[in-house]
Image (cartoon, rainbow, N blue to C red):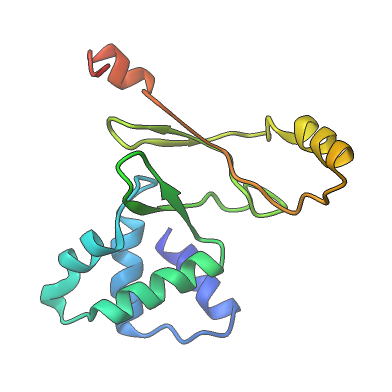
Length: 147
């Protein structure tokens, strides 16, 4: 994952500095679990990495398609790594466990037919969408974490 993120920066013409590599290592360590920019910053603060560098680099990685933002029930914005090449148009429909934070990506968009119908009926040209389905994963259900 670190190499993928580094390659994305290089291919887009961005310098791969040591502070960016520190952040890339921290992001890659999240392993498809949602995280906040603030928590990432707190974990890197002792390295001397500044808050502005953390948030600018997170935004850059998001703009490059390596991260996407999640908006969960608690109102706190989180980031999550995206799957490489998961979607031609850049969107990734997801199942998100509200207990453990696990994110599972859907292989196909379940909204495709509905979006075509909505566009036809409304006269809109649908350019993008995202679908996040919140619930409990099988592991949390099996462990009795069904609150």
